[in-house]
Image 1 (cartoon, rainbow over the protein chains, first blue to last red):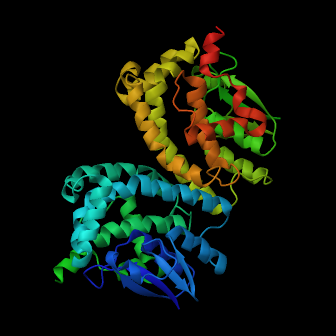
Image 2 (cartoon, helix red, strand yellow; image 1 turned 45 degrees about the vertical axis):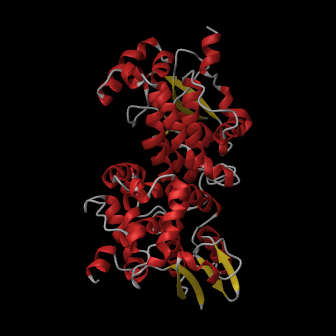
Image 3 (tube, helix red, strand yellow; image 1 turned 180 degrees about the vertical axis):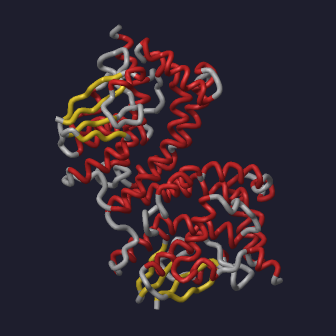
Length: 234
Length: 234
């Protein structure tokens, strides 16, 4: 069975790595089964080689593939049924959607939720997370995440192109979800499972889209507890 | 031959409608020939029916189709060779790219260039243009376009997802341009032909992309004079 190295948190049922969620949805899309190997930021030496020092990494029949985009391409080559892209153009355009999500949305989600993401990590990962993020941004986590409401306003505005698209079609992939949508559900799960934020009004088309994505593949996305439930269970 | 109703300016060789440029590139992509019918904002009564009161409108063998997106779909159905999209997913994802370009980039270009766009119009169109734009934005053209340098900074930042994509592939469509790229060239032509702005550094990947798009289909995009040459010729 395929093994997927996934980011561990301090709650066994909370997983929030946006890049690992992309891969889980890609695997489920193809009807493949997998086993998750939870691993902390500071357990990199346990990753199979070769790797880029971060999750996701999959091991499939002794082949090791890392990086969620490369894993998607690998899966479409090895398991051509139920493709993640219906052609070269949708793959190329998905790369743009990936870039948009990473350049625009990811930064805003991190500004909204970083203090929660920090809190939900295993204690042994917290020092690493703080050091790497603070050296990357040049400010403390508390400064970076200090105005979540303003980041939320920007985030909701930045989603406008997606919102307009969802008036026209069910998914970025059209009538059915494709890998572009799995890029989006990754981001949404990061926020939903890794933070206590209530970001969307329930009548926001993006909220309805999130719900549809969570329902896909037998409710795959709901297998991780949302942060608020995890905290309540403590 | 297909007729394309295109926005007229005061210079016979300057055409800047972003939506008409999308259609010209789509026609050229399919190797179709067309005849342009220049028409002003205030000549709507000369448009063939049915129409939405604006260009582009095409007439193909007595069929009238308006709206650049609907024209693209019509062309792919009637002339399936050299498709504008290689499948349903690339068409769906192109709708997202269209929405992104309209919600994010179009506003910034208009804030950069609106006073030039106004200037390049036929005198008989200026009143209509000012009235409709001012009532839409709630401010005068001069206020809307009063800080082009700040809009330019935002525009260059907003292009970052495209810039990252262009490091990975030649076009949004991948190795070859598809309709997503024609949406982009429309916007770029609007700025290049309708305004005197120098927006890009020449080593910006988006500038190189613009040049590649202008070269396509025998240099189609270069058939319209840029604003600066038109002014110089006066």
